[in-house]
Image 1 (cartoon, one colour):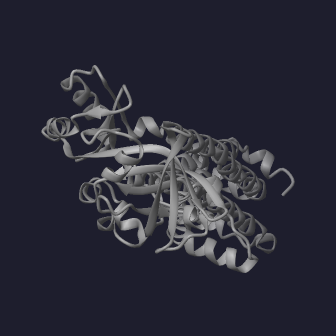
Image 2 (cartoon, rainbow, N blue to C red; image 1 turned 180 degrees about the vertical axis):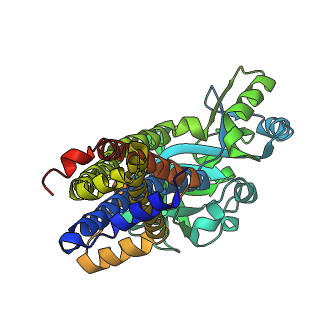
Length: 417
């Protein structure tokens, strides 16, 4: 524990006005540099957290927590399989689907897309796609009416609007007396959706399950697979493997969202770790500026140190005086940086939006980054980790200057006084 005079002397030196306040100015710059480094690191980690959460949310809105598919391409007698799966603990609903690749044409415009046949009511319960519709409703997809809901980017590529018609061409052909002809059917566009994931907004079309089965030549009791909605998506790997075991395993292939999109989330975690290490170097540089600040203070206060030593202050007391200064600078910079980083992170989208309008540019291309906004999510653990590392570096930076001050010899310091 430091005695009161050590605290008073240490804080007094930080407010030094000698030499026109140069030491105080350098101390202030050390605090500002450390705060900027800490704030930058918190903002970057928050962006990585927000990107991961937003990506996961958007993926799960158009895909599913887990999937069961037939090894032969289809699941026969899917209703009995659905009942067995929905009895499994942790499973909220098992929604059947038919999914194949197809071609969509409208006038002179043609593009490929993934065509997914769904049961509207079960799809509404299985995913959050119903909340992503910007026009129409999933209930419009009634069997036999041949209606389709397109991603907004896909509709834009085809130059269609709600009420227009598109021709859907299946890859398998039908043998006719004149040769093999592709299966095709005219669908009316009844709705649009915007998931925020360009991959799906540009490449997914939704139709009724019965219409998709007819178009792709499946039997009435066959589907491509089951999409599962679970009580806890984080338990998807364990739950889906248990389901595969209970189904007997043979004839089924199971997967979950963590496996299907593992590369996305692995790259985010790797990038986050690398950014933490690299930006910690910035914090380290700012923290070790404290060394220069304290060395300057020690050099300036040589006479004061010698006088304190002659009045009975020991090396330990002098060391504590200068250690207090370094700790105060580090604590002030760390807390100021943490507050600034959290504040910027919570208002990052507004800041980025303002900069985009100011410079008439777009920072995030949705074709590359799968989203057009820059989300940020502050995790308390990240803030504590950054503050802990910054304060530890500051504490280490005070060791050498404080040790040097404690070893000052009074006779040598007062020799020329």
